[in-house]
Length: 181
Image (cartoon, rainbow, N blue to C red; front, side, top):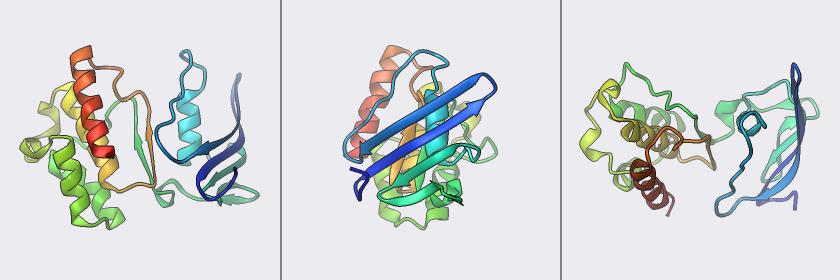
């Protein structure tokens, strides 16, 4: 493909004894999942795509635009990616609403985006709450909401449900499906 509707990767990342080599041309429709054992490089791959591994060699292209390689490096904040880390990494000095608005304001997304995300993830009742008082599932929904509120071109989820019990996992998956619809 390597064209207008794909994420093209031909890159290598070395850290100590760890080597990640990836060559893929991923269609930008639907959901693509990456699985593998702990330590196999799943998080490193997401970090490479997001621009959080500037030392990686090779190329990363999004819809044909060169993000990394051949002497070019597009910084993470210019890549229009929503990234949800394994651990929520919310701003504890902000309320839920302020966390959601953070990326939304920086990207200049239209107000309807924030409203749609809040509705889809059922966050309306939490908007004024402190982050420290949220349950694990609520934190993950806020982290996903913050990423989606920025209206990204690509959403990267790094095991966003790993710390949740099966009931909460199912609930959060349903919310994600609604948000992406």
